[in-house]
Image 1 (cartoon, rainbow, N blue to C red):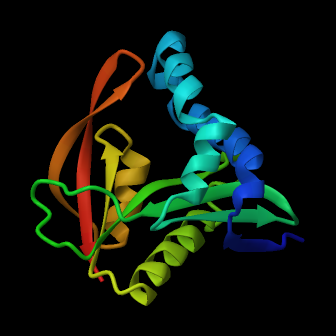
Image 2 (image 1 turned 135 degrees about the vertical axis):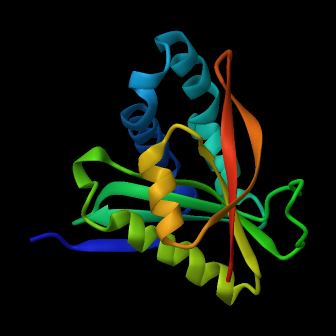
Image 3 (image 1 turned 90 degrees about the horizontal axis):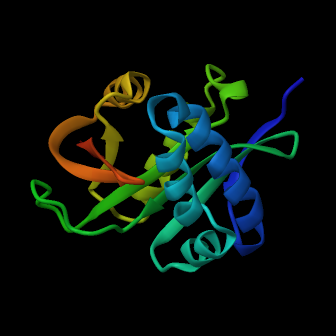
Length: 172
C-alpha cells in the first residue's frame, strides 16, 4: 500500500531533487530532443549547486512528493519575473511540476498542483502562471483541467534548440 506525502523540500534535499529532476525531465523530453541538447541543458539546470541555490532563494518554495519515503515528484513555485501579458504584480510562477513516469496517473500531479495553489492563496497571490512546451499535450491538458488559460508564449532554449513554451495563467 502506498503512503504518498507532499512536503516542503529543504537544502538537504538538493541531491535528491537533482536526481529526480534529471530523471523526470529525461522521461518527459528525451524522445523529443537530441542527446546533445539534453546533455547540455541537464548539465546546467540540474546540478546539486544550482538546486541548493534555488532552495535558498527568497520567495521560492519546492514541494517534494514521496511514496513511502521515495521521491517521486516535485513542484517549484517562485515569485518569478514579469511577463508580457501578465498585468498583476501578485503573480506566482509554477516553475516546475514533474512526476516520475512510474507514478503517472496516480494523482500525484494533482496533489502537487493543489500544494502550489494552496501556497499561492495563503501567501496572498492573485494569479498563478507557468510555461509549458507547446507540444506537451499531456501537460497542456492537465493545466486546462485546472482552468489555466493561454496569455502568451516565449522561447525556451534546450541546449541549442529554441522551442516555444506557451504561457498559461489562472486567477485564484
